[in-house]
Amino acid sequence: MKIYASLAALGILLLAGTGCQNTVNTVETEDKNMTVNTVKDNRYVTDSFLRDRLRLVGVNTSETPEGLMRAQLTAVNVRTGVFAQAWSSMTNDNPYRVLYKFTWFDGNGMEVESILSSWHERRIIPGETVQFQSVAPRKDCKDFRIELKEAP
Image (cartoon, rainbow, N blue to C red; front, side, top):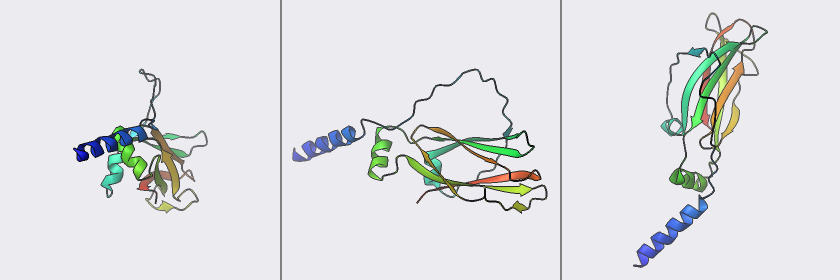
């Protein structure tokens, strides 16, 4: 009987600790009035833990008025719900922190070195949709790569 009382008390504490979830609710227009240039992408997943927390929705590109290529990755933090929140609170990873880096390539496939090719941190609340964006450093940039990893 003591074990059931202990489990019940633990359950109540767990629910009380996650009762005020730090999540995001979203409302947006149903009929989109924009034209999105979605690009096909190849994904190489080496961290299944990151994959299960951050769902990559898609990649699209555009051009700035100055003629520079702009790239955007859209992702959603799918870690929502009471148990995910409890675990995130215990492991101190709410909001979730990721590092991302854009690497730009010229028309010959050669990497273009720039200050933009460094790691940047982004904090993402459970349920939040985020966009990772970068603008090419030069007009001759024709392609890019986006890398993501968990922040230490």
